[in-house]
Length: 358
Length: 245
Image (cartoon, rainbow over all chains, first blue to last red; front, side, top):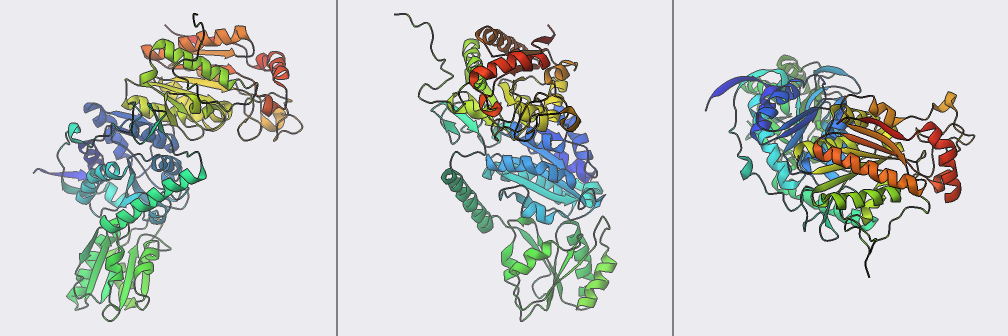
């Protein structure tokens, strides 16, 4: 396996191609521009299509249009671009289409900053669109993991016919690390979608009047929409039961537990190591699936043993902390330390701030 | 006895459409359904119907159907066609959809020369939501949001989409028709046929059809036809605006 030195954005874009992505539509926004730039060249080399859309809104609907043909497809953006894509994400979700969305996070709210940030946790995990639409959210903490999760995101999207949302940030998108790229997927090995795509006729889940297929998030009656929403609810319960992922680092005897994802989790690991060197029993719980949230390891924290949970986030106010608080025993104090607006969390300050909380 | 006229197989006989009496959308949809049957493309066509009155024909059509958000039809069609070159892709949109919320998608799909056909039913009103002013509403026309009549100072002037599209390099066929009488209905049919042929041969085509909305205009169907002749066609002149072989 050849190890290459690649920038996060380019590596994620190439991982998408290798996963079988053959359509991308996007709109320029910093700090994710290397994704569309790479794909503008690469997709045509492999027989795919790239469109630089007139807006993030349009890009999300181009992906909606591509997905209904059975094509593996993706869009990427950052910050306020995701707000614009929210409309299309809802349509994709409501029509039960698979698609991958990458968010290379920047500071917000509003125009905010182009610098790296983790301020889209809540919008990604709770409400990526209107009407209760939910996406499967993955959060890599280094370039190799970003590659692996983007590659896998297409399988998850196909498996559940949902939006698989990779939430990363400008640090991971723009730093270079050594990565091993996955192998090129054989398109003929990808899941069969012929029973629902709009490019075919005949019986299937989207068929009306015998032969006609329809792709829509519209339902004719309240009862039908309610039934569809129950299907979504059941799917989300299934995710919670079967799909949560996290990394537990130095957790066996941990008395101080850090909760962090993505870039902040790298900082947290450094802090844990430093505390361990001083004899403080620190550990880290790193959610990899942000939604479904890995509730169990947080519920399992024993109040007799764990003195404190500290959420490290590049967000002020904290966002991850809302989920952590919901599942950690109320007897264990949960605190937050973070930087925001594009200021990158540094291990030294995270260490100092955490020490003061002990 | 010889059957000389019937519904095409692209229309379900057992279903009834939901358009108001005197509405022009049903005529345009009917022409489209006939043409799709006559061209033999009904099995591999996908019609993108966005939000408004325009998608109501979907309930009587056997053609594969896609719903798009308000204004986004041309973007959906772009993704669909780029990923499935063998599919015949058509957008059927109203004026609130195409000429207001969807202007960016409409103009840029046309400018890229996407291999799609856009059929634009222009009835100068938001019909589905109860008769609000559209970008195509006539000056002086009453609507629920221009209760003293549209005036250019406050609301701008009616927008001519076909002329805007015809000003772009890529489109191969751009024309405006009307369905206010039989003669013009037949001309519209020829226009739709031409637009679909351009699509089949690889190119972007755009058809604007001036239609009546008696309910939205608070008029009888007869008065609506009269309004088209006396007012709308003066602002929206008919004819082929662009044709590239």
